[in-house]
Length: 391
View 1: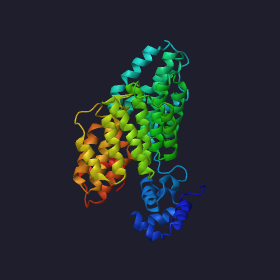
View 2: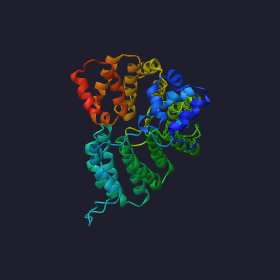
View 3: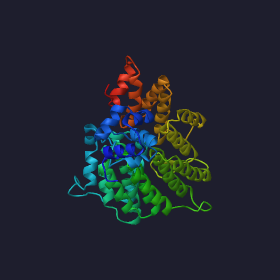
View 4: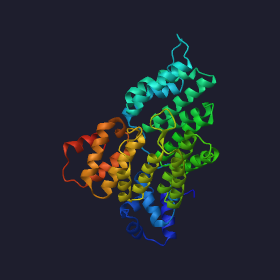
């Protein structure tokens, strides 16, 4: 369908024989919002809203989509912070003369030194150190140099996506895939690219890229390494995540089963990349299952999964672990347990404030809490300022 969102929604609604009010009653989306959408107000379109409408219309969410929607790019402060990195990636700002020729070992050591900062989500520090490191890596051309450069570009693409710099992140990840001397390194960047599509609501693009590479690298379980299984299983977790957003519950269950099989084969949590955020294993699969449940508005299932998980896990401050806590906060909010939700958000604020500030999801959850309050506490106001919630 080449029609825009409003035309698609109106056409599907009429084919189902529903009035706007009946669609509102069936979906839980307000009548005024449906009218705005059908009149072509793209600013009112959120993926969560389209999913509710798709369920009521018995279609896939992506059927309603018309191009990119629901994307929040970086604010001015974040964009300025990453400007030197963007310049370095474009080959700008390099010194006229290089005193010491960089080596693969030296660049690798500097790359490894970033990992504690990445684990702690200290984005300002990382963005200040990356430009010179990227310029040094550009000069490495042998096999070892290409490997570390590809990993560095993949990590940079991950950081840019985390900070909502989506366009330059896509180019950086393409470069990482092209530079990688081995498929195992390339598919690490592919995983980031799939996640970036997913974060922007590009459901079809995320699914197609993930499935293509998962089919290409499908391991033989009897002889596959933990890293090979993790890279493959992580791709299927993304497909499951697409499925629940796209109102395809059968596909979600099938792909979660594939990922779970890989995790069970490994038997533990592993890092499939030096980046401490690139995790896979039974706990990760359980957390993504909980995420799928809360998206499907099954909050009790999400909370039950959270309660069943071990308290000590590999990389407890990894972005995926923090995202799971946001899912828990969302589940509490769906159950109107606002005190518990606020407690979880405050924990995240103390653990990773720079990460939380980049999470539109956190603003959505806090917004639902604030909507139910007559007055706000000082903590609520401070948290609202951090996540840029207008109230």
